[in-house]
Length: 149
Image 1: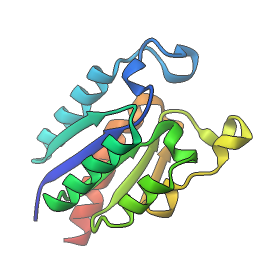
Image 2: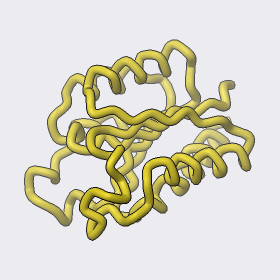
Image 3: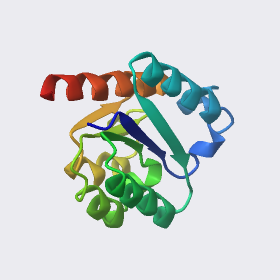
């Protein structure tokens, strides 16, 4: 079995640490990725991190993950959560666990954020933990894989 995880971040997450720090905190995306790499490596896994403001690019990375047989995907689709049937369709092709991740709790925010297309493909959902949710997601994915082995 592959020990390679794919971490995908959607639009505006490249602005972590600067964008609405009262919601998203002061930690940068580079720091988040470093936390995830350290967590994955400590458990014998590798993690490939990508961020894009382009829906098409995220779909291409999902397709590449399918072809390379990643063991799981962690995705924070950001605003695409609420709009992208195309990302859902790509994720529905994945034969590995998928964790949907959100820094904030979308259910405590504006009503339009309460619906997620991605949830229909997700194995699990983590939200509202801030950036700490990222390494939690790495651990949860690896624990899930170990339980299935």
